[in-house]
Image (cartoon, rainbow, N blue to C red):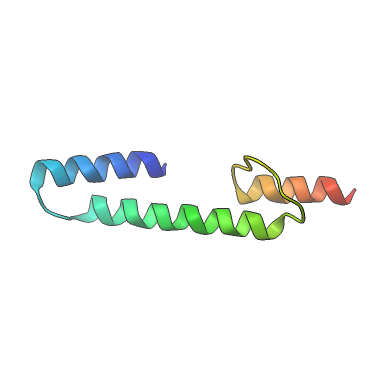
Length: 66
């Protein structure tokens, strides 16, 4: 989702030459994506590669506790 908003934001910026809602939403999505990655890292007790979301991190952690 972040890639789509980033693409739309830069197309808007290129076509209009002004910063608008698409750029702000792209920056916001990027910040939210980074925060989600940090939360997933805090949830996991050991390092895991390529964890797509917090939901998946919770599932991995619950499987490790069993």
